[in-house]
Image (cartoon, rainbow, N blue to C red; front, side, top):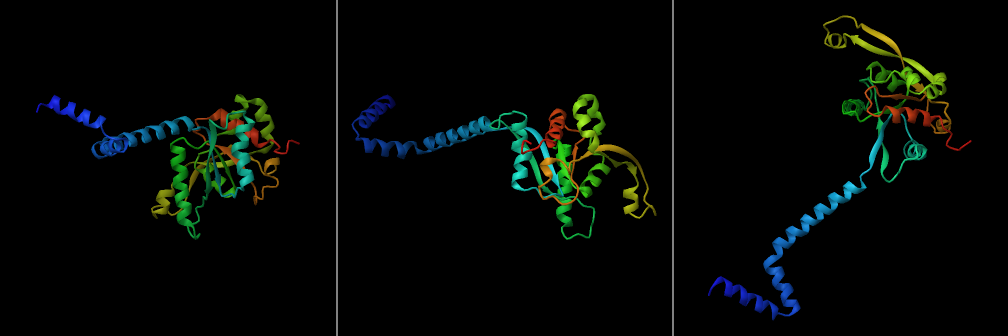
Length: 247
């Protein structure tokens, strides 16, 4: 029997089958290609859905050595999106939460502090950190490493914003060069460093948004020096001055 006749007989036999027999036949002989097609469809559909629903990150922020409650966290993320009149379905603020920075090797969670430091370095290197909120200890470390932007530059970019922030700006030490490696290895008997003072942080402790936030001690905000989103970062500093109650 020729191949053509065999196919014709198979089609005729298939037409004469009942519905249940046809389903059994299809499943028995074509389940692999059907399964492959279904999997391919699911993969393509899920990929398309992720692309359609993916939000654009307009700002990367971080909380270092501070505890931020749910309400304040919402103000610092969703509140900023609303303040800028952006679309919350398409745009968002991404946050590095629960960072702990410390050079104290005696602390119990030294390993966690080291992991956080590596995370911060990685985020800054990838240019996925724009603004950081921190306490005194974290500010000292971040500033000394030269990671914070000189905020006097805001005056030229946005004189009005600079004027509103100026009373709260503070200078901090930036290490330009030092012998920390040689000192830690015992090659040098004393530590010495070349430093400079830079206006690189805003004391936001008294801002309305943080008055009743339950944050202990002083709170500072700084813009990461290599930010890819300087305009959004400056707008965020302006937003921090806003009164969430509308008063």
